[in-house]
Length: 283
Figure 1: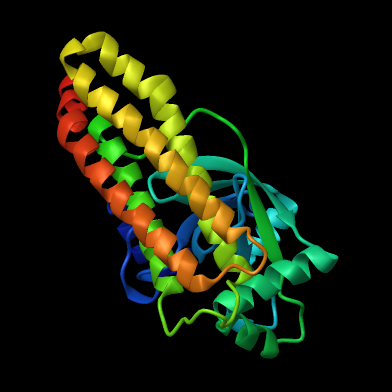
Figure 2: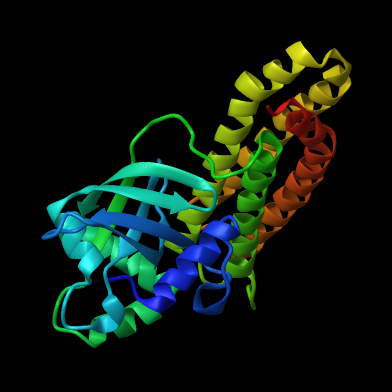
């Protein structure tokens, strides 16, 4: 049975495009829907997650350090095909329980980003499982009432992710200090790939669609296409910085700030000029 707290989080998540308050506020949150191991009933659970790149995210079956694995974990062991809601995106995924060194490396990354995971492990004799959720390719499914709202929601998702990365890079960093953490590297690289994929999709689909129906948008689409090229250069510079041996967090932070400012200017211009057209074209 769904507990009241989880149900409140689920409803808030779905009503606000993945944005929630309370203990999950300002974190990475998804909704995982599994099939009951015994009953076959579908169950949805809000969970924190870690980006893992290449269409994969990690979730951790900590259950707060309880002696037993959580129900959602037992469900996906029995039925690995699951549904995921991340922000406004909905997709099917295949769950894989990580083992051996792969599990240990992933859990170490989690502890590095949040020592609370180590506290949970210390409370229980079981080895806390780490699960990879690999997205199954399919047509995009975005929970939004219109084309324009979908674009705004996708943009807001990138805004939140860049804000989280900036928060993770904040603090008393100094050249020559601790190197960039492994999980933070993954977060940066995943955001870079996501933005690249988003812009590539717009260049191949959205922009030609609008160009064919609204010739008057030619100067706007030309500017947005040129901005995509400039943003691709910034994304590549951040990627190169993050993968450069022992990257200096101060340098990475500067690259993220530069990228964030450029992305925000680009999104604002795109929303101002394209969303009215997209919403007007809706049936």
